[in-house]
Amino acid sequence: MIDRLLRLLRKPGSKNAVEGIAPTQRTTKRGDEGSDNITVYVMTPKRSILDRWLDWVVRASGSKFVFFAILAGLLTWALLGIPYGRTDTWQVLISDVQAIICYVFDSFLVRQQLNEYDNEIRAAAQVQSRLISHARMLNTLKKEINEHRRVSAISDDSPLDIQESESALPEDTKFGRAISVCAHILGHLVTSILFWVAVVVWIGIGPLRDWSNDWQLYMNSASSALMVFVFSFLANIHERHSTYMKRCLDAIFSVDSKLELKLRELTGDNLENQPMVIPPPKVNWIQRAIFYYAEFVGTLVGIAILLTVIVVWVVIGPVLKFSANWWLLIGTYAGLVGMNDAFVLRNMQGRLGGYVDAEHEKIDEEDENMFNLIALESPPSNKHADNSLTSRVSQIMCRISAHELTVVAGFLLLVGLVIGASVMRWSLTGQLLCNVPPSIIESFFMIVLITGHNQEQSRKVAGLQSMYERRLKLLSFVKRIELLRKSSTNPPQKLAVDSTFLRSVSRE
Image 1 (cartoon, rainbow, N blue to C red):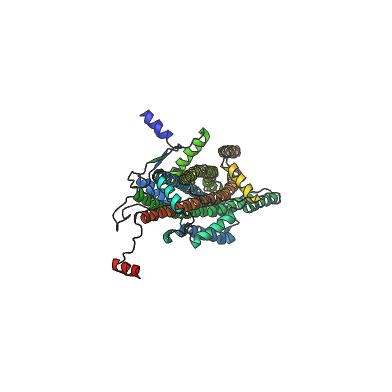
Image 2 (tube, rainbow, N blue to C red; image 1 turned 90 degrees about the vertical axis):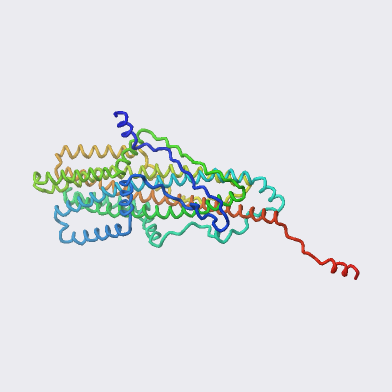
């Protein structure tokens, strides 16, 4: 029983091996060709009903409806702040509401990233599974390909079929493109600089306001409002990009399925696609602890704990006479946990994205080997390269913020803030110490998250575009082999000429 409990406790945080099998394409009779074949990427459904329900909630949090509802709420807050914004109770109340919303979105974003990683790594495994079959069947055709190349000089630059003439991946929606523009603005290095300029200006005003609680509350309210917007924005672009990536994978899988089917028709190969197992990434104990915490948050257990804390907070309200200090307690808890989650989110974004990139690089290498096998020139890669100064600085900033030691530094900062507030006996000023700095740091990390997301998305789309073009070229090449085979097995028939006519011509 104890061993079973220990295994259960050790399970979170460990990235297990991922197995993927591409659906085998069956050759059927003419007229029914491909009718029962799966030609798109099918996501693996989760077994637990609770997991499926939580995923539905997370997807809903990234919907346009929720995004615009958050914007409407922020606008309402700004308008109501005109008559009520000068009171401490108003600012503390709004700060609490914003901190709780951010805390909830923290959990949603963690689950979104875990789901994205799971879907993308399984898709990579299925592509690699089908590559094994492609290489085997092309090797079978190698002798015939060489013979055709020797006799008829196969042209590699022949036009593609009409169905495959579109060499670009599906376009994003107008709303998606508009959001992408906003993401590039928010994630730009200039935005990060302007953020810290605003913080420096706020600090400069401190002596003029005698470093008062009101002065701190203004920054707390402003940074909290910014976080609410950025969190909802991140949830929306994650959900939208997940949908778009599914469309891109569907396009790649569709061409890959046609290629497999055509190769099976040419070779008579009926062997099933083999399962491909991607081994778990090797991580140190610090990274393992971070993943452990992330999966803890991603199961939304953190939200259940928050609800418990809220109940306790309401119960102790009469004891603290519902003072401003009491109002700030729940915001302090959510703010401290939220700051830690921001460090974890950026680490997950960098690490999980890196694991997927590594598998895509393996696919690129295997594709190149397949092209070399049949002596076919591979299309040029669509590498996303931006060597501008702002891009290089942003990349350095993202690498540093994604390091596991940065997460450790963030946790130590959290401990230091709690100690400082405890020394101040959790007074209003002490609680603001645990609210304002975490709010500023978390807001900055949310901007960095957008920057990292932009860089990651650009790399992914460029990589998928290259993968798509390679499969289009292979499919076109294999179809030309099919035409050459048909022309060689069915040579043009000689015209039948009447012998009487020939004799009459010879006499003349």
